[in-house]
Amino acid sequence: MIDINGGEFVVLVVLAVLLIGPERLPRYAAQLAVLVKRAKALLQDAKSRVDAELGDDFKDVDWSKLDPRQYDPRRIVRDALLDDGPAPAGAAGAAAAAAGTAAATRSSAAPPRATGPAPYDDEAT
Figure 1: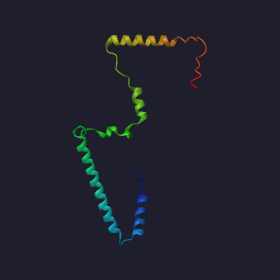
Figure 2: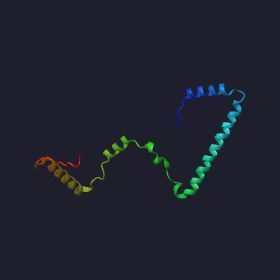
Figure 3: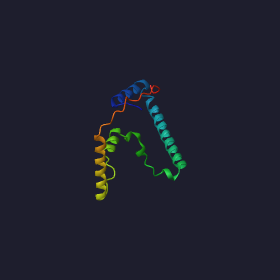
Figure 4: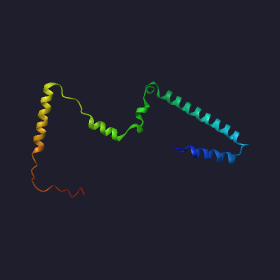
């Protein structure tokens, strides 16, 4: 949006004082204050209209959870990788997990047999 730091703001104020002049500056400042108050009232009115039209269902929605700036892809991936899932319950679960691990090592230990050249699809390129 507006990316003005303190030094730039001071330069703008000095330029406004020089260009507008000390005689007209209070009148323009008052007009700016009226404009800001009117804009604030319009925003409050729009917010109250939206709340009235959406009804009571949306009053308790936490909109900060839907803010896209809170999603950090690194955190999401880290949480997904560190998530262990449900732990097996009891000795039966431990035996099933051990059997699954043994089967996985047996299947990964055997190298795949080559049956011929790799398939080629001329329509895929």
